[in-house]
Amino acid sequence: MVCAKCIKPALVDTGLTVDELYPFIYWGLLPTAAVVVVGERRTTASLRNLGELAARIREADGPATMRVYPGTGHIGIILSYAVLFRGRDPVYEDTLKFLEGL
Image (cartoon, rainbow, N blue to C red):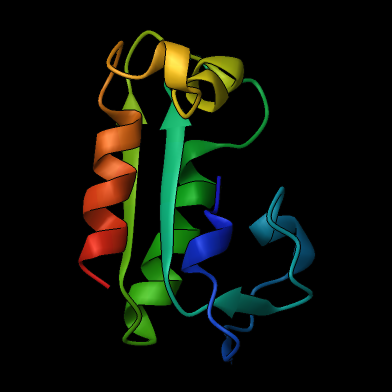
């Protein structure tokens, strides 16, 4: 998941193909900052591709972090941002810390 608040207007060309970015399709462009949060039980994106996404942003001197949360899937990550589900895991707090560091 790439937080919309982390995307700055300037984008950097990474040379990645659409398949390498899946499911983050930016037609070869990446945000200059991103927090990538993923549940260990995800069924959509591969950890390799997500790690590559964060690594390419860091290589372009952008702040990027990737965190894998054990025991949760895609829906669990999304629910972590909802007020009623905050605190069940550190997803929300970790995202805030990243944003505060920008």
